[in-house]
Amino acid sequence: LKSSNSLEIFHNQCPNFSHLMDNDRFDLAFFRLRTELKHFEHELAWILRQCFSRATTLSSKLTLLNVFYGAYQREVVQRALIHEQQWIIDNLKQEFQLVAQLV
Image 1: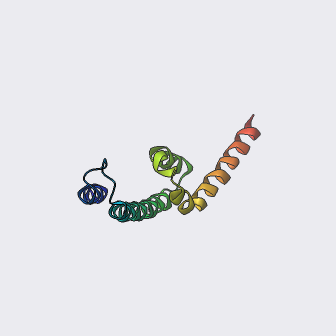
Image 2: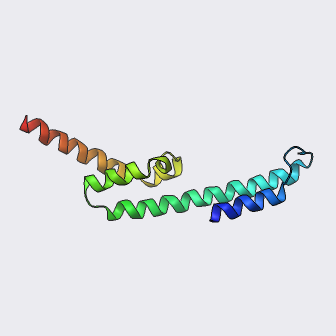
C-alpha cells in the first residue's frame, strides 16, 4: 500500500514520460520515489530480522529464507541478516558433520 502511494505520487508529478523536457521535475520526483523505496527496503529488512530472530530451528530459518528468497536478494536485507546467514551456515555444517559421522 505504501509503495502504491509512492508510485501514484510519482506518476502524478510526471504524468507523461514522452515529454521529459522538464528534467528537474522528473529528477526530483524520481529522487523522492527512490528515497521512499529505499526506506521500504529498510523496513522490510527490519521485519525479516524480527522473523528470523523468532525462528529458533534451522528448519524454520531455512523455510523463511525460502519464502522470502526474492526479498533476500536485496543488498539491504542481506546486510541486515548477515548474522542469521552465518548462524544458518554454522548449523548446516554441524548437521553435515553429524550425517557424516552416521555414515
